[in-house]
Length: 341
Image (cartoon, rainbow, N blue to C red; front, side, top):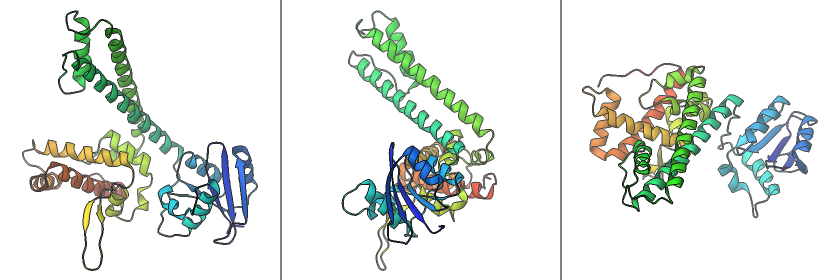
């Protein structure tokens, strides 16, 4: 039956399944293993499968799509209010069925294998960057306890530490020297891994025309462009640049009533990683714009806003504008063109 709706609560080993033929009613409830669930889907007539957009949901979405089913991924934060009383796998499936009836909840598109490969590379790079930063800060703090200070900048840490370890009179205890040498080796290994991932991203970007278009925008480099392609996927699903900026959490949070309209700080909804990359890109544009003799219209506007509101608010506002430019460039498949101020 094509009108059948099946809600699935995805887990590592056991999957809870609720079958609904009529809206608001559950006719069947099953608790299946992964193999039994795949067999169940194979023998099931074409139906609409509802899943939360969580771990392994995109994998199951692709498998169900090959079996001829329609797959709808719903955001977990949007389905949670429909879970009544205690949270269990069974109530989660019923909450999915109720959330699916709400037209204001926009489904998450199923990612392709290529998109998820890009996403995985970005996740690994972020993890190794965080580990590298933690190790650098640890080395700084430990050496400071022995009166050895290191100048600002990550590139100073390894050079300065190696010099201190080579100097017998540097004040570093002999018992600590082997451990510090091991940490330096670990940091170099992490940096090599990060460079390998960035080379892989560059190789994938060479075969993706959208990445080249996005890199023509100020503040959008290899990392941001490939992250947008990986995490956003199809930009055509956004009606306007404002909807795209709102999806990234860069539009103001609103608390309005009657004739009074109140706009606050940005909502910070959506993907934190993409928003961080766009804000850092906006900061880079602001710093570089100060050195330009004749800034274009975008940079002149950003510098004027920085003079009025300060660097941080100007960076976030510029990130909002960059997100709208990304939508326009990506949607219309054109390069960014600088306009004179």
